[in-house]
Structures are given as structure tokens and as C-alpha cells.
Amino acid sequence: MFLGMHEPRLDEKGRLVLPAKFREGFSTDVVLTKGQDLSVVMWPLSEFQIYAEKLREASRNDARVRSYLRVFFSSAFDDQIDKQGRITLPTTLREYAGLNRDVVVVGADTTVEIWDPKAWATYLSEAEPKFATTQEEVVPGIF
Image 1 (cartoon, rainbow, N blue to C red):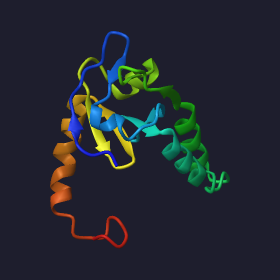
Image 2 (cartoon, rainbow, N blue to C red):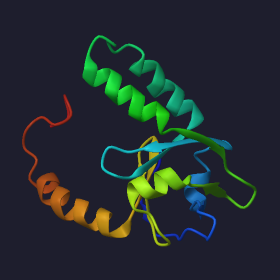
Image 3 (cartoon, helix red, strand yellow):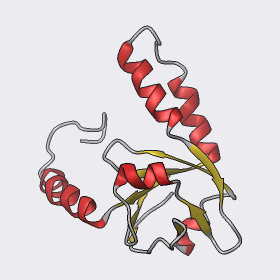
């Protein structure tokens, strides 16, 4: 389980040193892909495979499903964490998420999200008030 928020920097080659506590949750193999909120999502390979299996159950007769699958899988990159605990963020994903030198790395249970700091601040300013006042069922059986 990935928890918390960290603020590392990308180096000149687009590499990110993962926070030590996040490295523990990964083997060396990871998958990076576009997140739905203009972030980059980093998956342990095993979790990505589980999610991909669930996606295979969706009907490809639905144009929305085909579109989601195309964007999701075509933007996915596999990588390995190197001995210094770094991953390389591909240029296309950095551009998609607006990532430059400073980034915010967020634990999101089974994945890690990588955000532009301003985008993360904007997201939180909109999401936190809703989070604090959630009274209806957002996640079935929880609220």
C-alpha cells in the first residue's frame, strides 16, 4: 500500500528518485501510464496486470471502452527501478502531465501518482472540501 506525499525533483534526463518508502512496494518492474487527472500513474507490474485483466472483461462493442483502452495501453511504458532507486519518465508522459523539475509524488493505495505541483494544489483545493463533506455513497458500502 502506497501512502503519503513527497516532493522530489526530476533530473535533467527526466529521472525520478523514488522515495525510499515507496521503493519497498515495488519489485524492480514498473509500468507508467497516463492518469485521468493529468498525472502519471506508476504501477507495480503485478498490479498493472491485475487491472489489465479486469479491463479485458469490458465490452469492446462500446466506443467509450475502446477509446479508454487505446489511450490507456498506448500511453503505457514499462521500466525498471535502477540501483539508485530511479525511474525514467518518458517525454510523452512528462508533457501530458506538465512535469518539469519539481514534482509531487502521491501514494494512492496500489499505485503511485506523479503530479505537477501546481496541478496537485489545484486538484486538492477542489477535492478536499468535497472529501470533508461526503455524505452519500461514493464507494459502495463505505459511506
